[in-house]
Amino acid sequence: MAAWVLHVDLDQFIAAVEVLRNPSLAGKPVVVGGRGDPAERAVVATASYEAREFGVHSGIPLRLAAKRCPDAIFLPHDPPAYDAASAEVYAVLRSFDGVVVEALGWDEAFLGVTTDDPVAFARSVQAAVLSRTRLSCSVGIGDNKLRAKLATGFAKPAGVYTLTRDNWFAVMADRPTTALWGIGTKTGRKLAELGFTTVADLARADPEVLAARLGPRMGPWYRGLARGAGSAEVTATPWQAKSRSRETTFQSDLTDSRSIETEVVSLARRVAADVAEEGRLAARVAVKVRFVPFFTHTRSMTLPSPTDDVTRLTEAALAVLAKFDLDRPIRLLGVRAEF
Image (cartoon, rainbow, N blue to C red):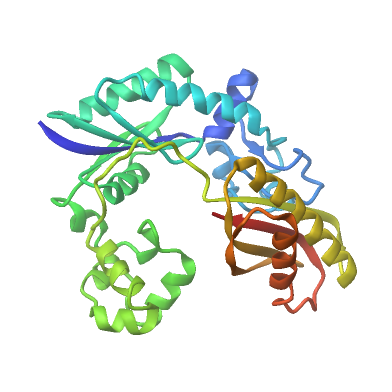
């Protein structure tokens, strides 16, 4: 028997939980976010597949979602309900003998499995999750975490897909570099400026060219991603959040510097309380500013030493805020402490 990595990803998790709570929502365009009022400033946390057909997806303003899908049903974000549903799913995953479960968040996990039939095992996981929680999931199978994670995208919804060294380039070669787990839009643009637009381009890239543009560590690492390289180690170490954050969307734009500073102080104090409750020390502080109409920028700084002190975290947040040119109205502010 061989060792495999499975990536289990719950399908439209938050929307699916809402449908379980109210079965009449099944088959309808459901959008979850904020307080569930599209007239207020908030963003989409998740959308059902029916809503996604209209171009509604996570992160867009609720008002835009309402324009794209006028018949959508808007619901408030309810984290305690999703916590409870997630716990039920993890209980199912951990019930399989000999399987190592590595939690990634509410709705996804890696499984370390030794089996001679990973597809059959994946389908048994799907069946167990569906039977005991009434939630469906997609499963990606790989010979490492990167390939398993990407395989899940081809499996959705409620399917199983295998991506390994054997079919990596056949599947991924012509896809854009941003299709890789770990390469976002900004990095994708930098790679395109160097002439690397596809996974195959990046896999053939000169490591020295990448290092010169993207850094001596990250440049070659991106080339490794394009070749499908990644860790196959799945660990059962309990998942811990990498950061704690708070943010506020304002129904009226902020334009006064004193008001902006007051809000950042308030957010920083709430984050400091979260950090203290977590029992860990923050090593970095970031501030997010969303300018009108919807331009979001983030700045951050590393602290001289890790801390959970409210005064030091607040002072750091204000120092980061000072890095911004606050020359436009602001619709959202956020503060994040990173561990």
